Image (cartoon, rainbow, N blue to C red; front, top):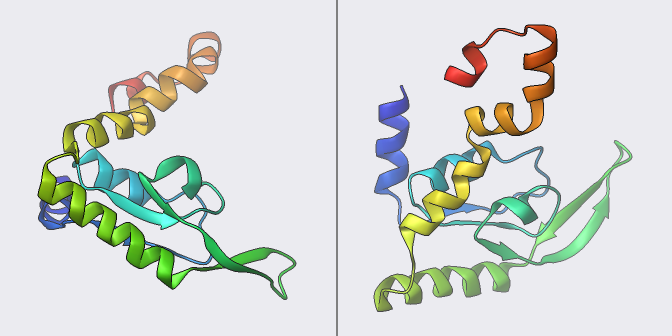
Length: 130
């Protein structure tokens, strides 16, 4: 349920999501919506989603004809330290993190990017009420 997921995300100090490749990164947005900082690889869409990003150590061309990255382990440690330090000294603004994630809330995405279709083609209004 939404409540259980929010409870899980709220129990985290940080979400560490440094993957080799990512489509969109829904867990990153979900964690941030709960005010939990997220660390992700500075690669694909994660660059614009996460509060803290880790540089790739290298890029790898795969047999699927696509790029993947290997996250830099030292960079992961640096970002974890940054989150820890900002939490300890009180400069980590969890409310601002939550507000940033609201840009990606379904009702905002539908309103901001699909309103034309909804208005002009009678697509069901339920998407805006979600």
